Image 1 (cartoon, rainbow, N blue to C red):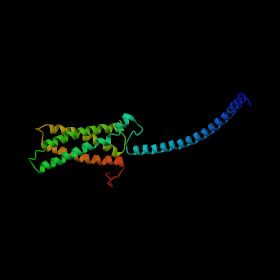
Image 2: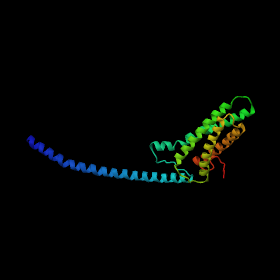
Image 3: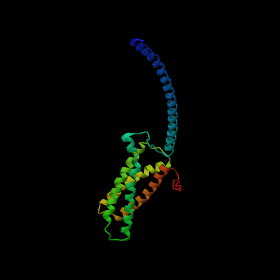
Image 4: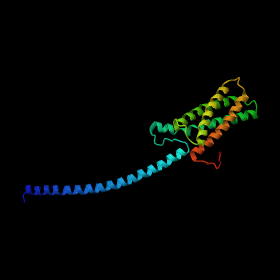
Length: 209
């Protein structure tokens, strides 16, 4: 057999085999794609089902967590729980320090209370701002959500009033103390309500309604 004839036979064989192999691969690929598509569809349906459940849960608690948001907006919406710790700690420390001043006069801790009040007031404003970013301009929700929302606004306003009183040397210390201890009570209630929204009703085994 001449080389040219041999090469022609080999070329013809390749042309005949290649479509068959390609067709076989195509069928195999289509079958694999169908399996993957079915699995993906099941996962998507499952995810949608879980998403609906989460949305219903958030709606029942009066929250719009914005779980679908990504990027800067998603980060901003997730910062509210982190910002509430600072005003809680600072206002409670202000109240405890004021109690120490009452118990032991002449300790010279009045400037420390002033600093704690300043920090707590600033933190309360930031926490309230991120609370509105978290939910958006949404005024719905159940009783727990409504009380939590407006109690947070009251804390921010009272914090600014306390900062003003603390900055004035002529201001009545009795009035400032009343505001500080009232703030401690409001912060305690606010923390409990936040726990109700985050972890579910009666999360401490205590029903407030």
